Image 1 (cartoon, one colour):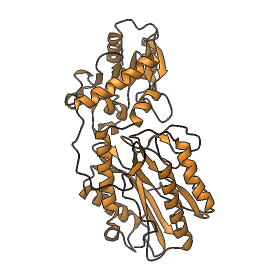
Image 2 (cartoon, rainbow, N blue to C red; image 1 turned 90 degrees about the horizontal axis):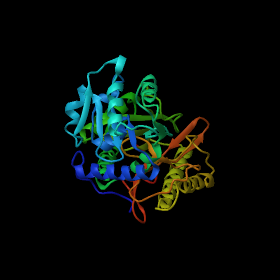
Image 3 (cartoon, rainbow, N blue to C red; image 1 turned 60 degrees about the vertical axis):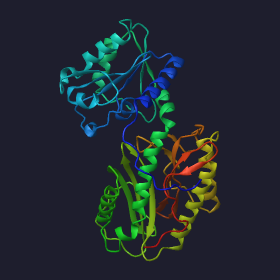
Image 4 (spheres, rainbow, N blue to C red; image 1 turned 180 degrees about the horizontal axis):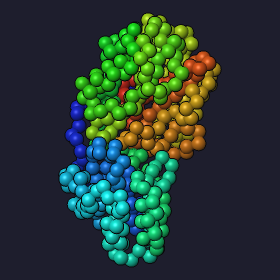
Length: 396
């Protein structure tokens, strides 16, 4: 399968049964690896197990904690300001403190709760923290050190592999949300002729695209980057400048838009009036490289094999790497997730993973091109969630 039909907007949120299954999966892995408790502190992990969805994470003032015991349901230890929202989730055991309280920002309550869950016998208990690659611990380091001192009999071990294994494979409900935001974004990119024109300042082009995304049904567009210049662009992450679009420019927009807390992440390239032969060749090469990566995405293959399939096409065409270090990644509750399509990543592809394909290459000195698509892995093949880009560089 290579394309997707227009998706009907899925229901928001998830059933209690889905959260119960996520917890059961986590506790099975905890048992295998000897963990007594997982301490989760970041937005994605807390939301994954609770359904707690709020933009309040943008404030760094307050920490938030979710405890996953080896047996029983999760326990939320959170600032009082979040209690009402948390009570709308399936979490029933919610403990709060008045915050901000810098002298004791939940540490005492968290310590007491952990001891209770460990049945006051914390000696040699194994507590998991997300300490691995592409993870963080979202609390002040001083508070973490204080917590570990108060629970000095515990072993504090890395649980990132558990979280990574769970979140890499999506449920049907998660895939439905990802499909929907990809459809919205594909619809918006298809409006390029109405959105972009010569003489339009680049920052206004970005603004027009964001407005159209919201009008088409996206909840938000927290990530929109790209560039435009003659025959290609120099980088893909700078904020847009007010430079007017001109004939011969290649415009690229790469968007991470959101529906119900789930991201799309793909780009589109457009030229104005005409394009250089080098830009046209690069576009065709990257399109073919994406096809090769798509063909390599099957359960049992590795991310390294997907990378090699794409890189072989680029090398055969005489193109060099765009220098971004990888050619795609996992996708879901975060704009980028594990794994990575790169030579060193031996992650085995599984059914129901959602991935991006993102080959890139140099066009001329100082100019690059990037092409990106989103897809879901099925039992014997893959399916594009983004509407496949045209095989030749679109000219506006």
